[in-house]
Image 1 (cartoon, rainbow, N blue to C red):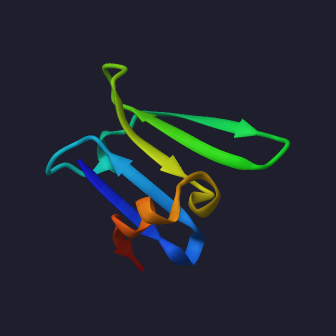
Image 2: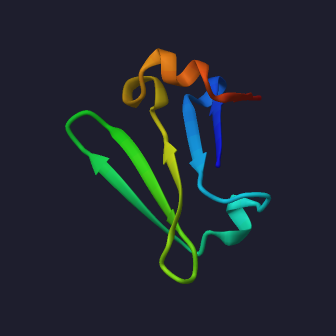
Length: 75
């Protein structure tokens, strides 16, 4: 499992894969969108339908600050 946070674009990603690129494995993505508050969460699935990752497009709004501090910082 890998947890990253990109402060520049306020996104966080939790990958449930080990030693594999999340982008090469995700064949289907589903966006959960709350139109009232614009908090996007993207679910990534592999070709077998297994959940392989979660992306938080408004990470600071969706995740607690102490959780984001535990993430590996990107960019």
